[in-house]
Length: 259
Image (cartoon, rainbow, N blue to C red; front, side, top):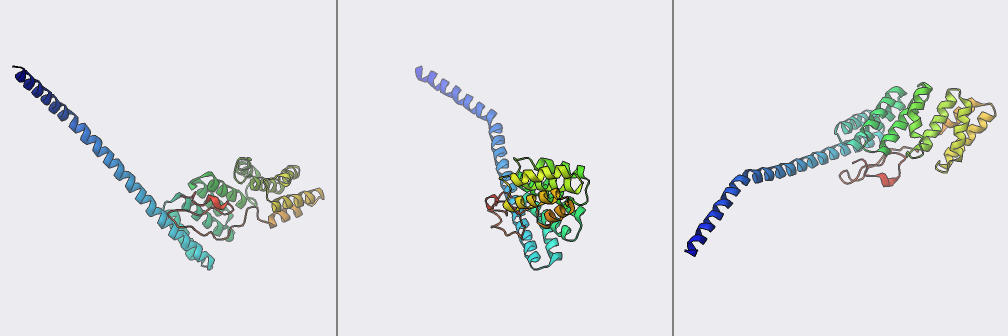
């Protein structure tokens, strides 16, 4: 009799397990399918990213090579191809190279627009601020002072990566707008700034001396004569999948941030 009760109890438990499994099976299957779909989506996205990065890097390098050989037309086409590939860092750099070509052709307004696009596409503040500063510099001779002030004042904050260069550009904008006293004050700040490169401090001191001597036009010419940003020779690239180029004037440790 005891064996019979045990057998009945075991059968009831077995029936409950089967019933529970039948109820849970669709949920377990759905969860597994969801995990699988998520993995496939992530794998597909990574493959798409890597393909775009390689395409952008290859096109960008072709542009740099063409530019070093004086082939502006092919350089322009290659930078445009790199821009369209969709990798944010290379898109930013390619737009900045196109802007530099526009500047060389005295198309400052077009250059500023390209720099603004580069800033919008930038993957980090370093790239973005460099493009924003370049845009403001491209407009120094043509834009109203209020516009330049709006562009440069945030960049001049001491926590921003190119604050010294933004302060120098702002002082130049003030000088061009006839705000001599404001320009002298800001050039003084630059000349005393420990974060400013030595050549920048020398330019600021030169501008102050010219202002004090009543020769503001000479101060403008002196500061314009030197670049207000670090030199930007054609940039070379590390292997495209593992690293991307640092922007002109940025420390080498920033390489790879473009990815």
